[in-house]
Image 1 (spheres, helix red, strand yellow):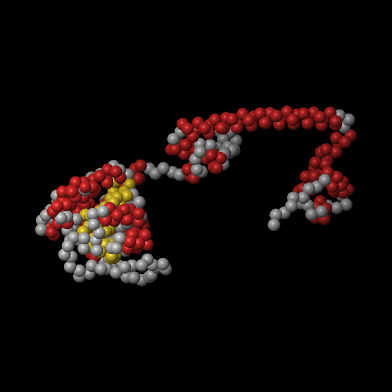
Image 2 (cartoon, rainbow, N blue to C red; image 1 turned 90 degrees about the horizontal axis):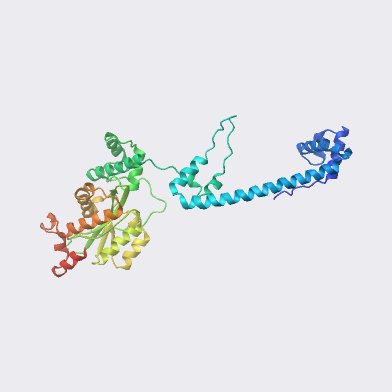
Amino acid sequence: MSRTRRKFSSQFKADLCVELLKGEKDLNSLASENSLLPNLLRNWKKDFLEKCSKAFDDTSENYWKEKYLAEHREKEDYARKVGQLAMQVDWLKKNLRRLLDQDTKTSLLQSLSKSRACASGGEREKKLSVRIAAGLPGLNRTSIYYKHRNNKSAEEELACRALIDRIHTDNPSWGARQLSKQLRLQGFKAGRFRTMRFMREMGIDAIYPKMNLSKRQKKAQILPYLLKNVDIKRPNQAWSIDITYIPIKHGFLYLTAIIDWYSRCIVGWEADDTLDTRMVIQAVRKAFRIAKPEILNSDQGCQFTSNEYKTFLRENHVLQSMDGKSRWADNIMIERWFRSFRYEEAYLTQYNNIREAREAIRIYVKKYNFERCHSAIGGVPPALVYYPAMLLEAARAAA
């Protein structure tokens, strides 16, 4: 409940001051009796003593007129200055927003927002509040606190991520501890927790059997593995889908690929810089333009356990299969293709941007499907086994 501010008349103030000057009661007692703060009563007494002599001043009327005129002129001067300053601020805001780029605005605000010591007296300058300063060029106030990353450190981080990807490809059972030691041997400043963060962001996990010592409170529904001891005899009987990490010059992207178990043909893929279910469904949708499998196998990643992905497969009448926990060999077909792609393409090329990486992936997939001979299918390209003879040329043109 808010308190109502009390108002005191001039007569009330004068009576208390007179009573205080009588000396019969001390200031604290008189203030307590009237529910006042002692400092307030002390200020009233001070004003009373300073102004009481004017009651006997013959020129008091002229004095008040002159004081009123002086205050009126001062207010007019203030109003004129405020108008001029408001016009200048509007002009500055308009031109700052129009002429300066984002980085220049941020740097300017960061320097202006810092309080500097004056050249004389050691007093600190008054500074604008963060909200007002950021509003001048039209920035969010959080921009003032943002610090640009050093280009050298950003490049070092990308190189570190690329090395993690290479080491993990050769040694998939190594965890964060071993990887961090390998990185330090190569001259990178990478502790265990930094390495763990990189692995988590890259979607990399050490592949080895783990004990299930705890259970999640809200566990996603895990579907059974449907390809155990299944004899794959024809194309589109079973597909595998998975996601891998691809480094580019100023970042990284994720590649989702789908492979046909029988022919080893890549039937669909999608690349994006965001790891989400949308990218996975887009890759599957592209593959479904060619054909639909009886079974589509994946690991237990959150993209594949999402309701959106499960519903999409169910609507297309495709059975969903999942690897057993820590059973990376259940999805060995797509894992082997990822390894080939890394060593034959990704590690040999520095992609400058996502568009360039996508074009390189498209060319590699086409060459892999239609030109590269595969030993597991009799030394012929996968497309010769997957596509019927009459559709082979049409598929080659569409790839």
